Length: 317
Length: 292
Image (cartoon, rainbow over all chains, first blue to last red; front, side):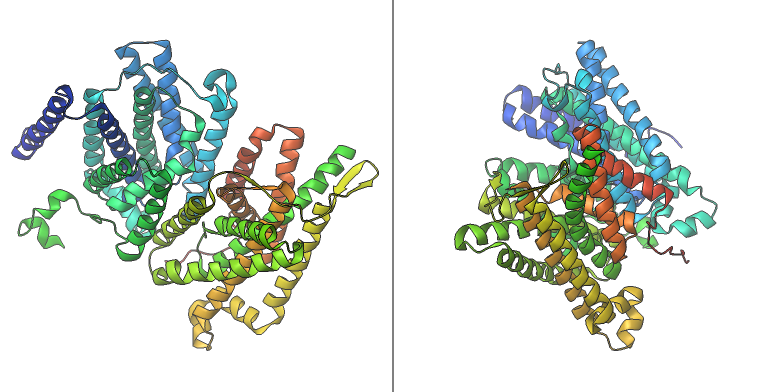
């Protein structure tokens, strides 16, 4: 199969157009620096949501500790970047953050992924809390509750875009690979998957590690964009924020996560001056989605599926 | 030695509060297999009801406790009717996410109305201190332990001796069979939520009295810790929740007393992960076989 087939070239062109468009809008100042923050938030949230979607949406392992991995990436990235104040240092920081988060993901995943459903949710929540308390107490490295300040800013639209696209492409390809199908089969029925000879633990840990890896990237970009990180940023609330995006967009739909990340960031920006109301709307939204549309905006479909009526994919349904 | 005894006294008082909250978790989980994330926030609402009742009407400790328990029972039943009942046949994850939503809703609606600031609780009980040897026991601690014990006895009586308790046990054992025997499932589940939430409300008032400060996000951590307690004791088991609550309270006070109080929360969660890995069914829980 050729890599440069029609579909991939189209995707490439559309991606380049989106990048160029936003870049032009930014340099001409049509998008002010206030809205630039929204764009950064959207990109980081897309990375986080897509990675959590791999774990929760595709593999069906309910994780409430994604902010924990994000914080590992953020702290590792920030510490490396503060030592090496250059673009190379930034990239090493992002890579280091991602690898550190993935390693912790494997370390935590192996014991906890034996648990199922609710218990896994609580265990991952507990693990994220433990990570947070650790960062809070490592005063000499992480500066404790006061947090790290003055992290050099290398994250710009170029890097945000590159990493977001990279995340989406890799996760999308993983989901469509044989490993990805194994993960989906675990979500559908773990016992059936196991009896078909799928090593469920292996695939669950793989998905968990990949999810953690990209959460680490998201965290590192976050620290580099916002100059400042502290343990409170990465609390339970952050994990819920990411989960809301995934649930809202549809568990098992990457384009759903992208759309939800954009919509929620726009809602947040509009409600900037009413932060308490924002949380109430969030909560009501979450309950309403579950009551009226538990599968989320797109369910397990992708946006591209919606344009395929009459084509061969439609027959499978 | 004296310090250890003192820590044990403090641990028992804190643990009784956790036990009261854990009972609600364990009963709800036993009956509809849901981790009711909103339970910690029901406890927060209970603390606020107690606060407003005592501040504006000036009633004493016992009436405040009862009013708070009744309001929480109503709140719990409403939550169940509005948010959980329509999802009874949905996936567990859907209900769990709804529970998180309800929890956020309670927290931020409360914050919207009363503000995010910490409020200090009115002094309901005399600040007398009893010295036994070198151990200091506060009046509040005695009240907490006695209230918790009385409530647990009442609960045990309801669950084991009354008809509605029998219905609760039957529904948690086998929902469909219970329905065939003519038990009204919806009423029983409502009743379970009412009792669980009432206990959480009592816990809220007791915490207000003990720590003297309340805020809209106070329910989050104790809620999670009470859940750890319920898991430790064996989720679904009422005596297990009591033992679990006391153990978690003890663990927490000992870690803050002898170690670093900053690691208190981490210790509880590390303990949870250990239990889940070593004995997921908990101390008194039943092992469930997985069927295809």
